Image 1 (cartoon, helix red, strand yellow):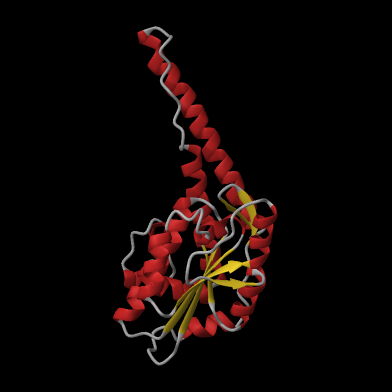
Image 2: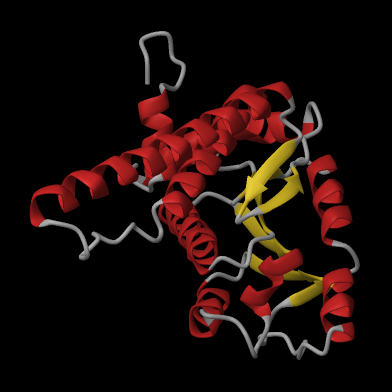
Length: 253
């Protein structure tokens, strides 16, 4: 953090890369809930990270049909051009995001980022250090990327462990819709054992599946049996709005 008490990009990047301690992450969660600017910066840094990972997911191969003295130079030149294009594209997207913070980029899809209502989450966050007050945190997953699924599980479990260790009253809900619903499908989830373990370990945790997405998956012939212990809400978006109005801190992964 800077001397002025604001969060530097380096600190927020450390949060996005899961390099902060549990106490630091808990404090930042509270600040995200009450400060829209920090919330937006974290979202943008997550998007930049995802874009860079996508750009370098398949590195270019070193050509083998050119003379030994020139093949490495040619490869470096092409690799530099591809890298520059990826970085420029990322910067253009980030610039656009600053112009319209309601548009997000998650796992190759354009999504709407809902804004926390004034007052609700802000008031909960302001009392985050008071053990007598219940903290309510909502994680939203709409990406089918297993990396994002693991990230939401890691973040949720770390937060719940911290609250248990500090005897903090808390409730945490993970809402899935879109491709994120795959996390809770018995036939598709890459982490069924972990979801079951977390539900058994934390009685103040709930995983919710969007009924609208379930109906769509069913119409596409996808098996819609859910993992044991998960719940169903009529609409993931409506549930997010409903909980935000009740003062839940909203975090999109």
